Image 1: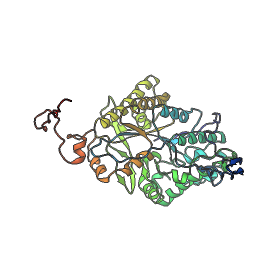
Image 2 (image 1 turned 180 degrees about the horizontal axis):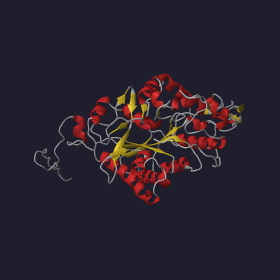
Image 3 (image 1 turned 90 degrees about the horizontal axis):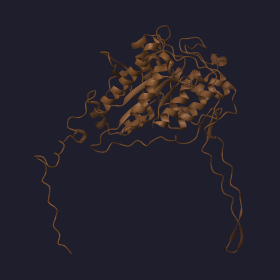
Length: 429
C-alpha cells in the first residue's frame, strides 16, 4: 500500500457544523394563581450535553447521531448483506475527496470508516512533537500538514461523525518495509504510536493556535476502537497492543469472502480477495492493489487505459458483492485512499460501486463500528455456523433450515406437504 501524499492547503474553511456552546437559563415570569398573583419559580438551567475535553480540541456531545441499534437475528432470518467502505489516511486536501465522498455516502444511505492519519492533525512547524518508534523526532514518510489543511480536515471529521460515520486511525508516519518500518515495531512501540495518534487529535487546537475554533464533537479515547496498519504490516504486535488498549477490531489482514471471527481478542475484519475481470487471479479489495496489477507501482499509467482499469476495479468489486449477496452473505470489506491515481479512475470505480450496491434491498453499507456492534449482538453459535459457509455458497437447505438444523417444510401443494384443511362451512344468517 502506498503512503498517502502530504495534504495540501487551498480549501476554504467550512462553517462549523455543530454549536458547542452551553444553553442559557430560561427567563422567570409571573403567573396568576388561584389566590392572586404568584411568582413562578425560576426554571432550572438545562444541562448542556457538551463537555469540552482537555484544551477543547475534542468534546463529549452525547450519543453519536445516526448510529443504529444492533439487533440479533431472528430464528431462521437471512443475514443482511453488510458492505464496509473505508479510507486510509483520511484528510481533506485540495482534491476535496473527503467532502465529496461524504456527499456520496449520504445520497446512497451509507456510512463509512475514515482512518485518520494523526500527522494530518499536526502542523509542519510542530513536527518535532512526533517521536516515531525507531526514527528520529519529526520524521514522517507522508509529511505533515499546515494550519489551513488541519482546519479543513477538522471540518470534515466533525461533519462525518455527526452523520454517523466512524473515525478510526491509520497511525502517524506510515513507515513501511525494513529499517524501522511498522513490521519491526514491538508491542510497546505500537502503544506509543497509538497514544501519539490520539494526542495529535486531542490537542490540534493547541498545536495550531486555533483556540476559538469549534471542537470535534467526540471523545477520541472512546471513539477509537479499530485501525488498519500501514502497508498491512506489523499486525501481530499491533493487535496485542490494541487489545490491551481496548480496541475491538483490526482490518490489517487479507482474507477470503467468509464471515469474520475473533482473532487475538479482536474482530478480524480483514479486506478480502475478489475477482479481477479478464484475469485468472483475484486481488485485494483496495484501490492500490488494483492499480499495482494494472500499471505497476506507477500511479500515472497509460491514460488510454484509465477508463478500462476503473471499470475493471468496479466490476471486480461488484462480482465479489454479488457472490456474497446471493451466497453466504459474508460482509464485504473494501479499502481505499483519497488519491487520484491513474487519473482518478479508482475514485470513479468506488463511487459507482457505492451507487450500485448500497441501494439494494437487504444491504447495509456501514462502518466497522456498526459491523462490530452487530457481530457482538449475535448468538456466537449462529456466527460460528455462518463462518462455516464457503465463499459464495448459500445454505443448500435454505436459511431457515440452516439455522434451525431441521429440514425446511415442503411447500404447500406438493407431495409430502401437510394437507390443507377445507374452510369451515358456516350457516348463513
